Image 1 (cartoon, rainbow, N blue to C red):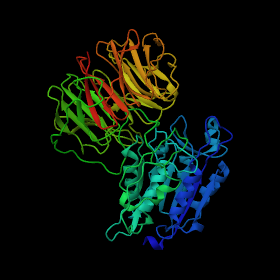
Image 2: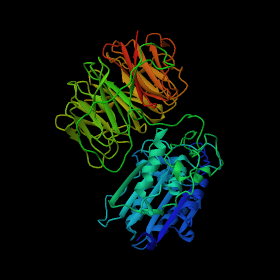
Image 3: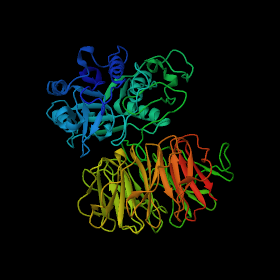
Image 4: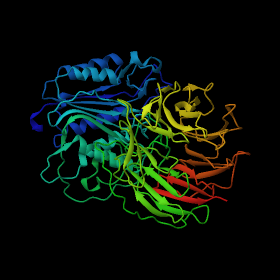
Length: 622
């Protein structure tokens, strides 16, 4: 059937933006992205696209992009399979709408000079084609939302494959002449897919799963797939089997395009890349990880196609001991199979929870033995906080509801839903009666937990996407941390801002935390610093805490308010004296990857850290 359908596509690669070069710096990857992708899709062995039916546009202005997208969809027939691909800068407006940037885009005038997701959807709605694949390799690409309309014909519908979530920056290309990591993995998946018994073709879902596995093996950015319709869409022929087994990929940097030469035998090996912020991305393996842009550590997991069901909780195996390289004796190491982790202690201090990607686990703090595995309860976990009676609140990622879950039985007790709203971040008031959720943009909703209904209109933070939230101990104040380093305090009762935003950070806010008396606020940022603030006067307490050499992903204050803990991309955690704002000894070393989460036990004698090295560590605090 696939061989008889006509495949048509448009590949857009925008690398230069001369009308707004400060906000939209030139990119290295887009030209190579569309070059390598076009070569794979039209390859005589694996491609289903005739070269004449796959157009490539390089550095098009907004009018050219609009004309080309309109032409692709309006000239289609019902049986066509259409592909729209974009690599370049993605921008969001104040409502969270995604815009694809053109050569003449100005960020101050996105509606007039960039191509919006809304505009693209409107064009697609007028097309007779019933099978559409949209692939976006740009920052915030996960914010592209398809129309709710669908077809009930198997194998027909709209499929949106994106390089990142709606609040994430995409990865940057390391060198000119190389594709982005996402597009490089996409090309690799097309060329080196494992042979299938009697399966001649590669579908969008299979390609997505392979790209997702490669990208999340060693990085914090997860590609997304959304679809409206039924069945799956074939995108390429399966490559012929390799005639011989080859050696694993070298860790040395290959020549441009080398990713496409990997053999099926190495297709399952994870791939990493050096990068800077998108900008663009690179698909080449690198000797070591470098700085990557990340969304807040409280947002975890990756969107996939279907959700799981509640299951019984088997006991887990944990490992204990003093790891080599740990700064302190008596460190306990607990294995955790996933990355992008958040950790929390229960209110009574008896249970430690860790949540990351599609896994949540609980341990008994006294015995350090595993209690429960919440895997399959929900397919994607988000942030998790304990409520006063010890139950856990688990949020799904993206277009999914937040759920209050009984950790003893694993059964959802309450579901919070709002039409067309997403749940990316959450915070719970100390009394457990108000839930705050963020929709992936700048809107924060307050919910009455008992009635599961929103408390009025959302808090519209005009400072950009909200990436972290926390309630004050009395529940009267909510703090939000947004892009561009802006901190805002809100009066919960009136849902209005408390004064002007707190400014000082020069990078996105990843974590915020109140002291137990509500007088001190701690923040951690992409700018590699943590800061302390007087929450009453809304003024900074001294200079930034700048001992870390990477993004500060997580902050926590001890129960007595005397000690601050920070976790960083530099693979360390640190303890700080709040009064003097100085480090308490050397950094805590032992993690072999970014430390994404820190939490104090109730008695303040233990610090829990979670890292991208897939371990939870318990540190004695003197």
